[in-house]
Image (tube, rainbow, N blue to C red):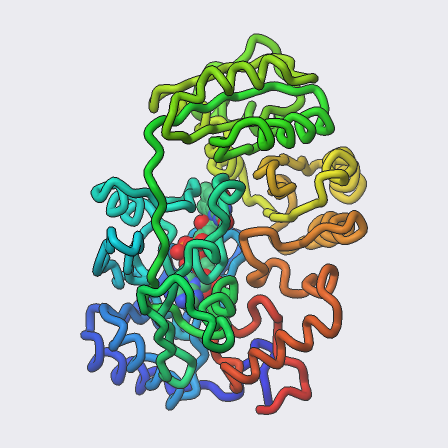
Length: 471
Ligand SMILES: Cc1cc2nc3c(=O)[nH]c(=O)nc-3n(C[C@H](O)[C@H](O)[C@H](O)COP(=O)(O)OP(=O)(O)OC[C@H]3O[C@@H](n4cnc5c(N)ncnc54)[C@H](O)[C@@H]3O)c2cc1C
């Protein structure tokens, strides 16, 4: 019998613990509840579950052997990188082996000829940026969790962030990868060739698969030229329509535009209160767009002129030095932490067509108030892609009524319920809202082909296996 979590039998945990300890060393297999605890709860503290054990291999070869032993024992496996995911994808539901990839921290090569970096799955985004910088290059993806988020997790979620508008998400940086299937078989496409259309694009299939198809061990990623100058501006608006129109105009007029993020006033107010920062403008405004340009020439004057000539701008502040830009970014990037300090947040990462953004932003607070009068919605995100993070404070962790209503609204307005954070366990049961039955059935077929026993990250993304799945 399949369990609702997706696996068929309970593994012999003491025997598996001994077998894995022989393989990776006693210190890298954690069975003590106190030592496991940090791996069993997610960044939001909304999702937690007990792992049978935590195993921390130190090399890709050890990952292969760990997966073989887990397969022999019939043990389900949850891959985990930096554990900064926001949909409960990297924490167990209960009883799985937690496979931490955090020790695969080797940066094997920065290939300046090809413009690539070869990095282990556990390399953090910050370390990747530093390695690129040492060679006068840069990496196209950046996000606030850069100190903890890992290459494996970033690929597994197809992470985005503010710079997607210019450089694309992780899929666009991916040249090749190495990954291990549930039975220990290794898929390796690590060649330094930019054009390789020989057959299905398996690296991109794994990109965004959230640990449900294979465990990523290494990747070859594209690097970009490092910009010589950066400047950022925080620009205040009264209405979402005006901000959307301004963002579209700046994209057309400013070739160096690299980020167009948005934060609404209640979120910005929380950051200022939590960090004891002065508010950026004398008067509050309903929403603010953070625009950043990164260029080889001095585009500051062009940025100032573009902002000056834009309808609906109520106020603006520009920074071109690093400290000034960091102060502006803190007002946007500090929101998740400020909200997390106030309680457990329901996080709904969604995307809307540009024309529907204003309607959505107006209806979300009503929708939340109608179901949970004491709760409050905070909106922020990446305006250029219509990607809003709806953060709701004041709900019980298990109360999904608001999640369901907001996601249904996204579907009604023609959006996506998963923009860049993935589906994980938070949204698995809502997947069919914006994916057709044929689409979901094809995903199930891929899952059966690569992981026939549904042992990799069971219950995440696709939810539990259907009853008629081959066991
Ligand atoms: C403050 C903050 C800001 C954030 N901002 C952004 C943002 O702007 N854009 C964005 O896209 N995300 C953002 N995130 C979300 C998060 O940082 C990303 O999802 C990131 O890619 C997760 O990386 P990780 O190493 O922490 O992965 P984890 O949280 O450890 O795992 C995430 C998923 O990937 C799987 N996984 C992890 N490693 C592997 C592997 N080696 N092989 C196979 N599967 C694996 C896990 O099973 C899980 O399903 C933010 C998070 C925080 C806390």
